[in-house]
Length: 194
Image (cartoon, rainbow, N blue to C red):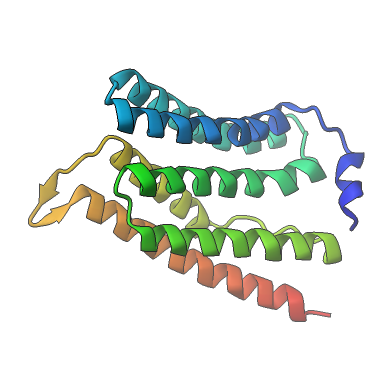
């Protein structure tokens, strides 16, 4: 499949607009994290939480509306995972810079996200194969949203010596590794099948 074929379907659908919303909102999330960290103004914190909520809601409803309204398009299938990965990388970048998010988890997430997009784009363009998210991947996205929210709010609760931040980071690493292994298995299967 050629990239230009992505634009042969309808472009302006509710689902595609919701997907684009994530791409547009991600830089604003980074900006508000930055502003809150240098000013301490709680209005920026409220904006961060609002944007995180909007990103999560748009991620859920874009696929829901695409299926419900029969608006599944090639553009949406291509753009949805790209929007997710873009939002994750932007959020994690600013969390590392301004909220003490661990750099090694940021690097793990970024490498996996970039690799997933590149390999997915190759499979999509060369073999017309869309690698759909799996259940572990959805848990990974949920753990990212949870960890991001915990770091945005700077929640330092602990139970038996384990902080909430440590627990959410453990979930991110667990689901990223498991999800990554499943993606590798899927990519290998698609690359070597005739």
